[in-house]
Image 1 (tube, rainbow, N blue to C red):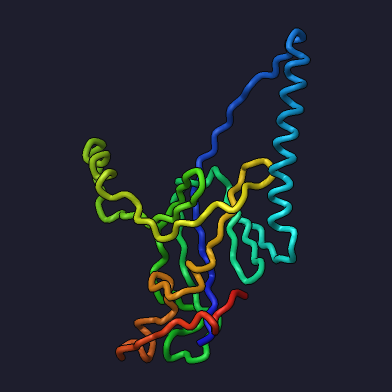
Image 2: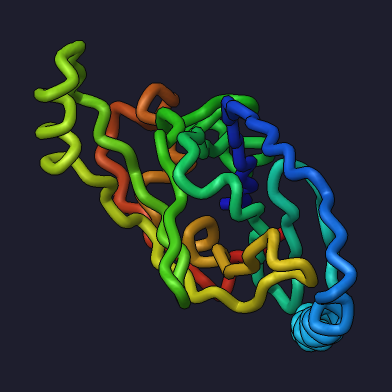
Length: 208
């Protein structure tokens, strides 16, 4: 079965602006210059790592996330300011070999309510548990400890972009795998009333 998946990401952000007045102190001019040179060297190293990582032929799509397809793998380049923000990720059928299993344009499963977190070396895709809601702040704080986001994907950080404002990590096997949370088999399709045993074949699957 030929299936393509579309990532749907929705996000509401609140932006704040921090104003810092510029100050010049003549007595520290050489110290500041030396610090600037060190920063430039550090930036150059990061630039080299980022450019080296993407030096090969690859396709890029810009958006809220920058998405790269390189050597058959899918990479997310995610702004650090989006970590912790709630989003939706879902799949939509765009082509299929048998429309009795799903209809073009349909979403076989509900979008996942998720957010991203990160450590020093890994990025976690977490599913939000929103089954329990209360207007009491104390109860809400207690519930937060009892419904932390389930980790759906733990991806190694490959590299930061040149100014360290974005993180690059691989997400291939989350979309090209036997992921039931992103299945394209629709329960409401013609064959939905039958018991279906689907087997994912990695050698017959690819990114487009």
